[in-house]
Length: 487
Image 1 (cartoon, rainbow, N blue to C red):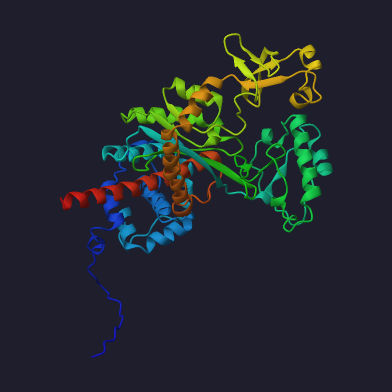
Image 2: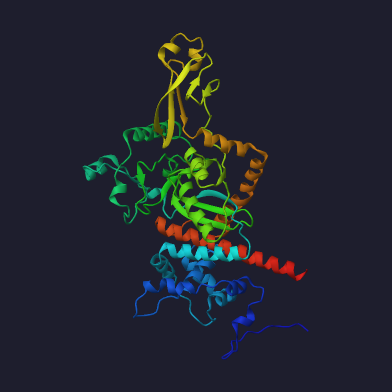
């Protein structure tokens, strides 16, 4: 007999949410594992003693976690999504007839709480992973990736000289009808003023001239994002902390830099931090290392090996890691050659010997592009009648050799990298940290920063990493219980 379902709402019904959420449901298991009650003590100083009650801090953080677990970056969509899911309502501690907080409460509370609170939650979840034996701490893989900021390239403004500001703007700045202007200029005056040297500005000018010559007639050249822009000459009034950055084959964008460290045993994120995207990775390595070293030490873990790509390579970093008793497996940057071909270095007397037997003696040390170098020169008389002068120095009068003062540190690191174990470590790094970045950006709500400012961006990155570690933890516990069940 054919059935036909007729729907008629009941005036009264008996319903228990806990009976409708299966025992093996992800959010039910997460509710049993995750205890955030310590947030009450940590956040009570940010509330008054009278007035209407605000959102429960535990509920706030759980709502944020749901956003990253469900790959939702809009606060409004998070609330809409949660209201339609019985398992998430059970995780949050809401019944089906209770109204969820207003979406704007999430953004206001996120701004209210300091960034160290989000780091404490991240550390708390990391401690849970350590207790389950998921983190060995011995080998850490470090990498970084740009994350798009919540600002458009169309909103960029030119930096101008401090004197005669208004007159200079009218004369030098051009806004096309297609360009968007920001509603409010949030950048401090120090960022609106040019601080670059004349040499740096000349380099930018040359690149713009080259763009006009080679790119102007190509498809898409009329787009402002296709033109050459620099942090030395432009800033974002919408998000002053965002920086212009680019990767090979990608368009220029306003980004933040997400630097993470991952434990190689079970791919648990052990450190995360938001940085400005206008600097190189190697400029952030020492800060990230100090922070991670302290965190692992508090967890009772011994850190021995650091794996990273060539972007973190520098003599200063190699020397720093040796001082910290950390073994580095970081390939050297392509600019390091170890010395000119055909020249022999005499370490005892600190000079180079050229193929014709002439000495290239040490003269001084100086900084070149933030790197300390030893500089060596020959005598003009030695090179004047040299048979290989044209090949060696061309039209110069003497041979100049500039080489980093950290040659020994470079060579020790390079020897490890070229070894069989070093090649194994390279594969270990690629299979550890790079998939984690892919997961964060594609599936954990980190494809774009939905806040303004580097402080807020740091909170977002910590919450995304916390959600990732929680997912890893539940999977590890589930697999472990399955193994014990069938033993």
